[in-house]
Length: 172
Image (cartoon, rainbow, N blue to C red; front, side, top):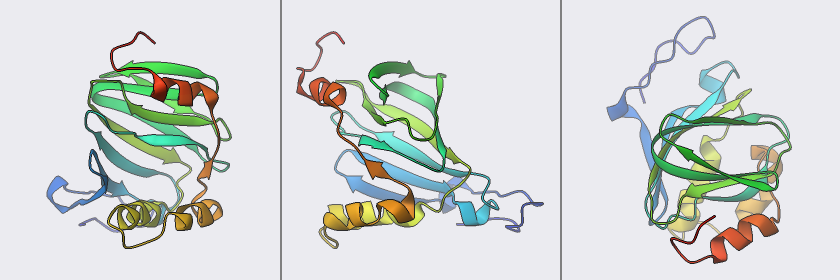
């Protein structure tokens, strides 16, 4: 990844060809754009590529950061508390700290999403852990064990579980 000076007074530039791309499942890619250490803690950002059938991110919450979603292309469903929102290209959503949320492409759809956290929290190693688990190089329990470090706390959501149980194409 190339960048300019990482001080908060200099811009951070990540060229598309230099961004690290991770595969955290057979239908999902995470392109790492900016981590907190490179932005002076201002923001952490990645691009999520969610293909048809991707489970996306399960219900979770963050205690120290808001999570922002900007849909670049496709259709994304987001759990926000007890509500499932459907976002299309150009839609923007801010999920405040401590609000349970989850996201995945709408059934039968794909989604390209810019995801950001503010203030920034160092999360790139969390995404690398997800890829190692997917590849069988790490244990799934390590994800739960890292919840405090990466401010990613998994929660139960009957609303999101019911969404996953519905047949593709059923009205939401």
